[in-house]
Length: 262
Image (cartoon, rainbow, N blue to C red):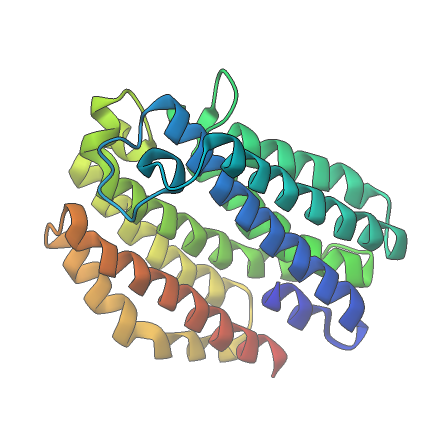
């Protein structure tokens, strides 16, 4: 959201930017509830390594968690309709695709997240579409500049998923959840995570912004993070590294936004 708005420059619209942010947050909450529900009813969270989930732990009824997901998607849809009315009706098609991708990630009879395709979806929807979509609803155009600016955001979003799936790899394999981490194995997953982090820096520089050098201010976070992942940290010990990856994503976005605004 931030990167797309910064690239919009003088064309930025506070109302449209706020609506885009709300849609993004509502979809994020919705997909979290959706995953909680779908994984819980399938039984794939019964031996979960990560934080406790509502459905699998019995803290909430499956119907309540599913309902929370649908309410989140509904609120995202309402904000999306308002955003479409202010910008372009093509936004509705984008919203439908986003909600379908969020639900089908682990929901339905044939979830693509169980086939190792979740990373592609995260890169597209939380990287490219989130950034370029925010830019588009404010400017009604798409440029190469915003495209290249969206790639680091997609890479870091995938990094969050990658370290999450690395943490759960052993248990996911036992229950037949073939995430990318399961498919490429422990060593491959660690190198994949490193590649995602490095690609964020690479494409920040390829965006053509001289001040992209500011993103290097996040190296004190990313270097120890990569070293620990390559060092073989496993299971629950990866949870703090997941939080650190989230911190890296936020600080990288902030420094990159400053670079793009100069």
